[in-house]
Length: 276
Image 1 (cartoon, rainbow, N blue to C red):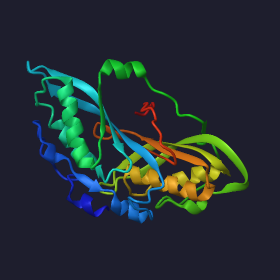
Image 2: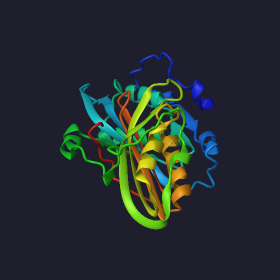
Image 3: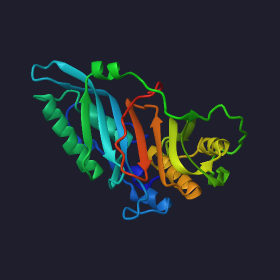
Protein backbone atom coordinates (compact mmCIF):
# COMPACT_ATOMS: atom_id res chain seq x y z
CA UNK A 1 0.00 0.00 0.00
CA UNK A 2 1.16 3.53 -0.69
CA UNK A 3 2.14 4.92 2.76
CA UNK A 4 0.13 8.12 2.26
CA UNK A 5 -3.00 6.17 1.34
CA UNK A 6 -3.22 4.77 4.87
CA UNK A 7 -4.32 8.22 6.02
CA UNK A 8 -6.84 8.75 3.22
CA UNK A 9 -10.62 8.13 3.54
CA UNK A 10 -10.38 5.12 1.22
CA UNK A 11 -11.71 1.97 2.85
CA UNK A 12 -13.06 3.85 5.87
CA UNK A 13 -16.52 4.96 6.92
CA UNK A 14 -16.96 8.59 5.89
CA UNK A 15 -19.44 11.28 6.80
CA UNK A 16 -21.50 12.53 3.87
CA UNK A 17 -20.92 16.29 3.58
CA UNK A 18 -23.22 18.07 1.14
CA UNK A 19 -21.86 21.63 1.34
CA UNK A 20 -18.65 22.91 -0.19
CA UNK A 21 -15.61 21.45 1.61
CA UNK A 22 -12.40 21.57 -0.46
CA UNK A 23 -10.39 20.17 2.45
CA UNK A 24 -11.91 16.76 1.66
CA UNK A 25 -9.49 16.38 -1.26
CA UNK A 26 -6.62 14.06 -0.30
CA UNK A 27 -3.47 14.34 -2.47
CA UNK A 28 -1.08 11.38 -2.67
CA UNK A 29 2.47 12.12 -3.88
CA UNK A 30 3.43 10.21 -7.00
CA UNK A 31 7.11 10.03 -5.98
CA UNK A 32 6.91 6.80 -3.97
CA UNK A 33 5.35 4.83 -6.83
CA UNK A 34 7.70 6.45 -9.35
CA UNK A 35 10.61 5.31 -7.19
CA UNK A 36 9.31 1.71 -7.36
CA UNK A 37 9.51 2.01 -11.14
CA UNK A 38 12.99 3.54 -11.07
CA UNK A 39 12.03 7.03 -12.21
CA UNK A 40 11.89 10.46 -10.61
CA UNK A 41 10.05 13.69 -11.35
CA UNK A 42 13.20 14.85 -13.18
CA UNK A 43 13.59 11.68 -15.30
CA UNK A 44 10.04 10.82 -16.32
CA UNK A 45 10.22 8.93 -19.65
CA UNK A 46 6.64 9.81 -20.57
CA UNK A 47 4.24 12.64 -21.19
CA UNK A 48 0.52 12.36 -20.75
CA UNK A 49 -2.63 12.99 -18.79
CA UNK A 50 -5.03 11.29 -16.42
CA UNK A 51 -8.63 11.82 -17.51
CA UNK A 52 -11.19 11.55 -14.74
CA UNK A 53 -14.89 11.50 -15.59
CA UNK A 54 -17.49 12.22 -12.91
CA UNK A 55 -21.05 11.03 -13.50
CA UNK A 56 -22.43 12.30 -10.18
CA UNK A 57 -21.86 16.05 -10.43
CA UNK A 58 -24.62 18.27 -9.05
CA UNK A 59 -25.01 21.73 -7.50
CA UNK A 60 -27.69 24.36 -6.83
CA UNK A 61 -28.69 27.41 -8.83
CA UNK A 62 -29.38 30.66 -6.91
CA UNK A 63 -33.08 29.76 -7.13
CA UNK A 64 -32.39 26.55 -5.21
CA UNK A 65 -33.05 24.38 -8.25
CA UNK A 66 -30.48 21.56 -8.65
CA UNK A 67 -28.45 20.90 -11.78
CA UNK A 68 -26.85 17.63 -12.84
CA UNK A 69 -23.97 17.34 -15.27
CA UNK A 70 -20.90 15.28 -16.12
CA UNK A 71 -17.47 16.55 -15.14
CA UNK A 72 -14.31 15.87 -17.12
CA UNK A 73 -10.99 16.52 -15.39
CA UNK A 74 -7.55 16.36 -17.02
CA UNK A 75 -4.71 15.94 -14.50
CA UNK A 76 -1.17 16.23 -15.96
CA UNK A 77 0.78 12.98 -15.76
CA UNK A 78 3.76 14.86 -14.28
CA UNK A 79 1.75 16.52 -11.53
CA UNK A 80 3.34 15.99 -8.09
CA UNK A 81 0.20 14.32 -6.75
CA UNK A 82 -2.63 12.06 -7.71
CA UNK A 83 -5.94 12.70 -5.93
CA UNK A 84 -7.20 9.77 -3.91
CA UNK A 85 -10.42 8.65 -5.57
CA UNK A 86 -12.73 8.44 -2.57
CA UNK A 87 -11.66 11.89 -1.40
CA UNK A 88 -12.37 13.14 -4.93
CA UNK A 89 -15.89 11.69 -4.72
CA UNK A 90 -16.48 13.15 -1.25
CA UNK A 91 -15.33 16.56 -2.46
CA UNK A 92 -17.68 16.43 -5.44
CA UNK A 93 -20.51 15.35 -3.13
CA UNK A 94 -19.86 18.47 -1.08
CA UNK A 95 -21.06 20.54 -4.03
CA UNK A 96 -24.53 18.95 -3.98
CA UNK A 97 -26.12 21.54 -1.68
CA UNK A 98 -23.82 24.40 -2.67
CA UNK A 99 -25.08 27.40 -4.65
CA UNK A 100 -23.11 28.63 -7.65
CA UNK A 101 -24.24 31.76 -9.46
CA UNK A 102 -23.12 30.43 -12.84
CA UNK A 103 -21.48 27.52 -14.60
CA UNK A 104 -18.35 29.65 -14.93
CA UNK A 105 -18.21 30.10 -11.16
CA UNK A 106 -18.50 26.35 -10.59
CA UNK A 107 -15.84 25.59 -13.17
CA UNK A 108 -13.44 28.15 -11.69
CA UNK A 109 -13.96 26.62 -8.25
CA UNK A 110 -13.20 23.13 -9.56
CA UNK A 111 -10.06 24.32 -11.36
CA UNK A 112 -8.78 26.09 -8.24
CA UNK A 113 -9.34 23.22 -5.83
CA UNK A 114 -8.24 20.35 -8.06
CA UNK A 115 -5.13 22.20 -9.26
CA UNK A 116 -4.15 22.89 -5.67
CA UNK A 117 -4.51 19.21 -4.79
CA UNK A 118 -2.69 17.90 -7.88
CA UNK A 119 0.08 20.49 -7.71
CA UNK A 120 -0.33 21.49 -11.36
CA UNK A 121 -3.12 23.11 -13.40
CA UNK A 122 -6.02 20.72 -13.95
CA UNK A 123 -8.27 21.04 -16.98
CA UNK A 124 -12.00 21.06 -16.21
CA UNK A 125 -15.03 20.70 -18.47
CA UNK A 126 -18.59 20.52 -17.21
CA UNK A 127 -20.79 18.91 -19.86
CA UNK A 128 -24.52 18.52 -20.18
CA UNK A 129 -26.11 15.08 -20.28
CA UNK A 130 -27.42 15.83 -23.79
CA UNK A 131 -23.92 16.63 -25.00
CA UNK A 132 -22.42 13.43 -23.62
CA UNK A 133 -25.34 11.34 -24.83
CA UNK A 134 -24.96 12.72 -28.34
CA UNK A 135 -21.28 11.77 -28.32
CA UNK A 136 -22.17 8.15 -27.58
CA UNK A 137 -19.60 5.41 -27.10
CA UNK A 138 -16.68 4.39 -29.29
CA UNK A 139 -14.72 1.25 -30.08
CA UNK A 140 -11.05 0.98 -29.21
CA UNK A 141 -8.61 1.46 -32.10
CA UNK A 142 -6.47 -1.27 -33.58
CA UNK A 143 -6.54 -5.05 -33.34
CA UNK A 144 -8.15 -6.75 -30.36
CA UNK A 145 -5.89 -9.52 -29.03
CA UNK A 146 -8.39 -11.05 -26.59
CA UNK A 147 -9.27 -13.96 -28.86
CA UNK A 148 -5.75 -15.40 -28.79
CA UNK A 149 -5.40 -18.83 -27.21
CA UNK A 150 -3.03 -18.35 -24.27
CA UNK A 151 -2.35 -20.18 -21.01
CA UNK A 152 -1.40 -18.50 -17.75
CA UNK A 153 -1.60 -19.56 -14.12
CA UNK A 154 0.14 -16.75 -12.18
CA UNK A 155 -1.88 -13.64 -11.51
CA UNK A 156 -0.21 -12.21 -8.39
CA UNK A 157 2.16 -9.69 -9.98
CA UNK A 158 2.97 -8.29 -13.43
CA UNK A 159 5.48 -10.49 -15.20
CA UNK A 160 7.49 -8.57 -17.81
CA UNK A 161 9.46 -11.74 -18.56
CA UNK A 162 6.34 -12.99 -20.36
CA UNK A 163 6.75 -10.28 -23.02
CA UNK A 164 8.57 -11.11 -26.24
CA UNK A 165 9.20 -9.50 -29.62
CA UNK A 166 10.91 -10.02 -32.97
CA UNK A 167 13.97 -7.79 -32.71
CA UNK A 168 14.68 -8.19 -36.44
CA UNK A 169 11.38 -6.70 -37.55
CA UNK A 170 10.13 -3.14 -37.01
CA UNK A 171 6.41 -2.45 -37.23
CA UNK A 172 3.96 0.30 -36.43
CA UNK A 173 0.66 -0.92 -35.04
CA UNK A 174 -2.11 -0.47 -32.53
CA UNK A 175 -3.45 -3.32 -30.42
CA UNK A 176 -5.85 -3.45 -27.51
CA UNK A 177 -7.25 -5.74 -24.84
CA UNK A 178 -10.28 -5.58 -22.56
CA UNK A 179 -8.85 -8.14 -20.14
CA UNK A 180 -6.95 -5.85 -17.79
CA UNK A 181 -7.89 -6.26 -14.14
CA UNK A 182 -6.02 -5.16 -11.05
CA UNK A 183 -7.03 -4.48 -7.45
CA UNK A 184 -7.19 -1.33 -5.35
CA UNK A 185 -4.12 -1.37 -3.09
CA UNK A 186 -6.17 -0.13 -0.13
CA UNK A 187 -9.57 -1.85 -0.32
CA UNK A 188 -8.73 -4.86 -2.50
CA UNK A 189 -11.73 -4.05 -4.72
CA UNK A 190 -11.32 -5.01 -8.41
CA UNK A 191 -10.48 -2.40 -11.03
CA UNK A 192 -11.52 -3.36 -14.58
CA UNK A 193 -10.03 -1.73 -17.66
CA UNK A 194 -9.21 -1.81 -21.34
CA UNK A 195 -5.67 -1.14 -22.59
CA UNK A 196 -4.45 0.32 -25.88
CA UNK A 197 -0.85 0.06 -27.08
CA UNK A 198 0.30 2.05 -30.10
CA UNK A 199 3.97 1.91 -31.06
CA UNK A 200 6.60 1.87 -33.77
CA UNK A 201 9.39 -0.49 -32.82
CA UNK A 202 10.35 -4.14 -32.57
CA UNK A 203 7.42 -6.35 -33.51
CA UNK A 204 5.59 -7.25 -30.32
CA UNK A 205 4.35 -10.81 -29.93
CA UNK A 206 0.62 -10.34 -29.32
CA UNK A 207 0.12 -13.53 -27.31
CA UNK A 208 2.94 -12.53 -24.97
CA UNK A 209 1.33 -9.13 -24.46
CA UNK A 210 -1.99 -10.73 -23.58
CA UNK A 211 -0.47 -13.08 -20.99
CA UNK A 212 1.49 -10.15 -19.54
CA UNK A 213 -1.65 -8.04 -19.17
CA UNK A 214 -3.52 -10.93 -17.56
CA UNK A 215 -0.69 -11.26 -15.01
CA UNK A 216 -1.93 -7.99 -13.45
CA UNK A 217 -5.15 -9.73 -12.42
CA UNK A 218 -4.43 -9.89 -8.67
CA UNK A 219 -1.84 -7.10 -8.62
CA UNK A 220 -2.59 -4.29 -6.16
CA UNK A 221 -1.85 -0.81 -7.49
CA UNK A 222 -3.48 2.42 -8.52
CA UNK A 223 -4.67 2.84 -12.11
CA UNK A 224 -1.95 5.36 -12.95
CA UNK A 225 0.89 3.13 -11.77
CA UNK A 226 -0.44 0.08 -13.65
CA UNK A 227 -0.33 2.02 -16.92
CA UNK A 228 3.11 3.42 -16.13
CA UNK A 229 4.43 -0.07 -15.42
CA UNK A 230 3.04 -1.39 -18.72
CA UNK A 231 4.54 1.59 -20.55
CA UNK A 232 8.01 1.10 -19.03
CA UNK A 233 8.08 -2.66 -19.62
CA UNK A 234 7.09 -2.22 -23.27
CA UNK A 235 9.51 0.65 -23.79
CA UNK A 236 12.40 -1.45 -22.53
CA UNK A 237 11.44 -4.42 -24.72
CA UNK A 238 10.50 -2.69 -27.95
CA UNK A 239 13.04 0.14 -28.04
CA UNK A 240 10.35 2.11 -29.89
CA UNK A 241 10.60 5.26 -31.97
CA UNK A 242 7.33 6.17 -30.30
CA UNK A 243 5.03 4.49 -27.81
CA UNK A 244 1.64 5.35 -26.34
CA UNK A 245 -0.09 3.26 -23.70
CA UNK A 246 -3.42 4.13 -22.17
CA UNK A 247 -6.16 2.46 -20.19
CA UNK A 248 -9.87 3.21 -19.95
CA UNK A 249 -11.11 1.97 -16.57
CA UNK A 250 -14.65 1.09 -15.56
CA UNK A 251 -16.08 3.62 -13.10
CA UNK A 252 -16.38 3.04 -9.37
CA UNK A 253 -18.20 5.45 -7.09
CA UNK A 254 -19.35 7.52 -10.04
CA UNK A 255 -15.79 8.15 -11.26
CA UNK A 256 -13.65 6.57 -13.94
CA UNK A 257 -9.90 7.11 -14.27
CA UNK A 258 -8.13 6.92 -17.62
CA UNK A 259 -4.32 7.31 -17.63
CA UNK A 260 -2.48 8.10 -20.89
CA UNK A 261 1.32 7.82 -21.19
CA UNK A 262 3.37 8.53 -24.33
CA UNK A 263 6.87 9.24 -25.58
CA UNK A 264 5.52 12.41 -27.22
CA UNK A 265 3.16 15.19 -26.24
CA UNK A 266 -0.39 14.04 -26.97
CA UNK A 267 -3.84 15.57 -26.80
CA UNK A 268 -6.07 12.49 -26.82
CA UNK A 269 -9.82 12.69 -27.11
CA UNK A 270 -11.62 11.63 -23.93
CA UNK A 271 -14.07 9.21 -25.57
CA UNK A 272 -16.17 6.69 -23.63
CA UNK A 273 -16.20 2.94 -24.15
CA UNK A 274 -19.20 0.65 -23.84
CA UNK A 275 -18.23 -0.29 -20.24
CA UNK A 276 -18.00 3.35 -19.26
